[in-house]
Figure (cartoon, rainbow, N blue to C red):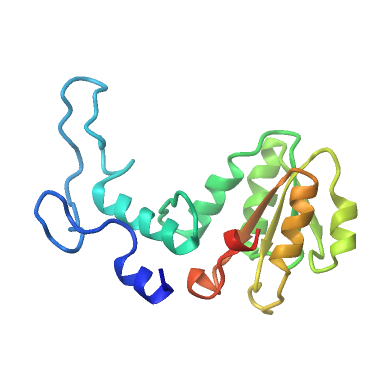
Length: 185
């Protein structure tokens, strides 16, 4: 589907209960359950609701992903991703990474034993040489804020795959309209 068409028609196709062509904004906080722990799909709006589900499906479609997740902020999303790592894990971060990402790694996750190393990720041979046994991910932002430095996502993806580690891409500036990191590897 063309990106412009996807922007209009992606995600969930209307509301199955009312026939509305757009998903309504559900303002309820709780949902009926047949019994304790027996959900009909939603339990509490903080953990999920039909409106957010439609947004997450649209984001996944736009990104070319199987799933999407909506967060209140970019830092909430970054914190969720970093929470996947455990003590002793190391993440290589681009020397151009967003300052908020650096601070949460340095001031919060460092306290939990998650380490990081700052590397110029545009230097692919240097990057490849820095991946050791404790490295579990490479985290880049491209184009990077504020200097707009560009890291080759496809090339870095090949390095990550070679070492069987994750590649995390902050795509803030480009959005999926202009750049789709998943499709680049």
